[in-house]
Amino acid sequence: MAEWLSRTELLIGAEGIERLSKARVAVFGIGGVGGYVVEALARSGVGMLDLIDNDRVCESNLNRQIIATRSSIGKYKVEAARDRILDIYPEAVVKIYKTFYLPETADTFDFTQFDYVVDAIDTITGKIQLVVQAQKAGTPIISAMGAGNKLDPAAFCVADIYQTSVCPLAKVMRRELKKRGITHLKVVYSKEQAMTPQYKEFQEKDSNSQFPENGENAAGKKRITGSIAFVPSAAGLVMAGEVVRDLIHSHCHQPEAMHCQIPLP
Image (tube, rainbow, N blue to C red; front, top):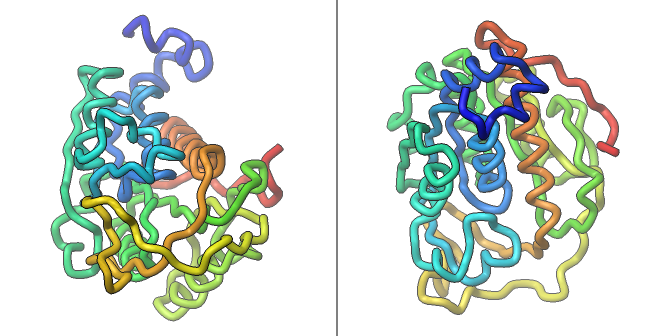
């Protein structure tokens, strides 16, 4: 075992380290939430990571995205994340995909090759397709609900989608997944009521903006939400913790049961 994982081994043992080193996890969306998922998975010793996102780092990402630094502005987010991973864990196998996950790009990915899927994207059509595709393949998936316009990192909770409340995105997902016969989905969501931003809409000013003048990008995003450093990061770390524990405790493609119906302390 590498020295840098010695403290982790004290918690999960040599067998846990071995399982993580052989695990392959796909993270869809390398932003405020997904970037922290990737960081924690790499530092936990997950040996194979697939990173999917088509955005580039821009200045407005500096307030909350771990991959965003002055030197990474303009780089593809998947490239910035890959470079961080390999600087931490040089032996890791990292595959990057410069694409948005949408129904029309879904066939690019064989979900049977993944041990776990992380949904950290924010387009509803993409999120639904991710869940459908992962469950069809029998691959565990965890999905992030809304983290924008929030200020309380302690309000995040791990639950089944059908046991969520408050979150508007979760409400839409419940309705759409029920239509498709999806009976369960592990999610991380916030019980905090969303704040009202001090503006209605604005457009990114930099040249790498993902919001052109018509207010909509290729992934269908229309509105920018308020964000802060400690909220999406908290959601991402909670998600990574779920993935790591499920991978350690599962001998097959069956995630650990939901264990939290109340906000984390």
